[in-house]
Amino acid sequence: MALDNTQAVVEALLFASDKPLMLEQIRDVLDNLTTVQIRKVIEDLNLDYEAQNRGMRVIEVAGGFRLITPVNLAPFLKKFYKQRKVEKLSKPSLETLAIIAYKQPVTKLEIELLRNVNVDGVVESLLEKGIVRVAGRKNAPGRPLVFATTRQFLEHFGLKSLEDLPKMEDFLQGGKIDEPQKVAQ
Image (tube, rainbow, N blue to C red):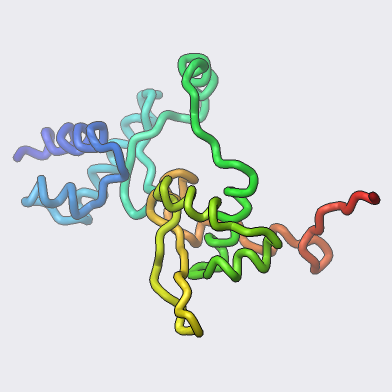
């Protein structure tokens, strides 16, 4: 395959894929190129998009690559998708997901001890959405299930890896984690 056509093939693959595309997946299609060469093709494609002020960019997310739209086009996309209903995560789901993301692998009991509420329904919902997975069993009495985040979690939040999560220090104030204000009853 001519190198001129390679960029078009990679672009088509990225466009057609509904999930981040791994370098190995692209290499399986373009078996005459190495992953280093493919990464260079992707970088060149992205530079072309930027230089021509195009409506797409390529980002690396969850160990793969995907096409996105530039931030400056967000108002137009919001207007276009105004009628589209997007399922959002509830506050309890986000709180539980944050605990799983930062403490994984973690058991339901450990989550419940931190949240002070039963999390059976919330964890089940996160499992159904594919954002959380059963990562095994803890070597403890009863061998409880432990939970961890999935690649879909990384995709949903636009993270390359768990290392891209905000650091716990970012949430600290004066050496203590911010406590919610207690309301006098």
